[in-house]
Length: 263
Image (cartoon, rainbow, N blue to C red; front, side, top):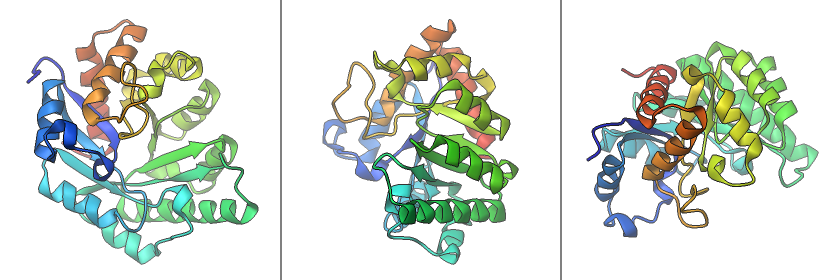
């Protein structure tokens, strides 16, 4: 166990992991996490079918927090306000999302309208339970920032997860009381925009994540991702910023607890 550093994976999808390489169980996964100094993670809801699973995981494992929400690519299977509120009220749920806007596939006007309506509902629920938002945005940065302003999402704040936009978008999000979360993409050779943001975000507003099982960092790129690989994200960003991994881990872990109202 690495006791010299403390790291938290602020965004992963535990229900989608192939656990075979880590002993076939979540307990085995946690052993691998602890060996890298990763002692906590947030498993994120993406649709109406996995919200109960996220809640159950967080209730069963003390090192897991959960969020509930509908990913913008799943808005064709919406949840009602009352259903989302009921899940969001559970103490093991620390955030709403992931929600947001995703125009990567050139979505139709109807789908974009559905995504915006879903985002609006998530903000409303977040305000009702006073919990932050986890925002996904892809090729929709202008509309995303506009929606966050329109809905007054700054009243609860949140995190721009797996951030891939430029510094101007990061500044707009920071001004709305959002944190910026950096994934393994930052380690990619062609990720100069993400690297620029990761070097500029105030340390007090930075989170790190894996988005596992997706987007494994170098040297695991192209392979399944796991929460303990957030260590590699931390090593890369710490070197870029000229600080120790321990300092980066302490700051991002404190940020995580502050954002998600944890002690």
